[in-house]
Image (cartoon, rainbow, N blue to C red; front, side):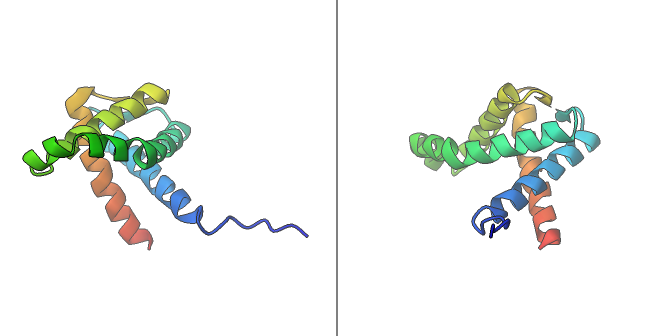
Length: 122
């Protein structure tokens, strides 16, 4: 007898990935000068890659830039988030960000919109 259920540890990641993909689609539709997404699959792929990068690469960046982050009272974390969003753009075809400042603005908007959607969904 097979158990076809999704493991409990995977479910929060899938929900967050779906919310992030919806947030990217909304921002791409409402503000195409900041982020442009060429379709639902590009948004899902970008959300997946962003989740992996935030889980594995971001902690390393945060630790390496801790003195700068402390000196700037945490504002340098916005730069890190923007750079990571540019990395997602480089990896995922169909996901486009309008330069460095577009990446910083996009990362802020993705955080805000996904936070609101998460509150609504749960």
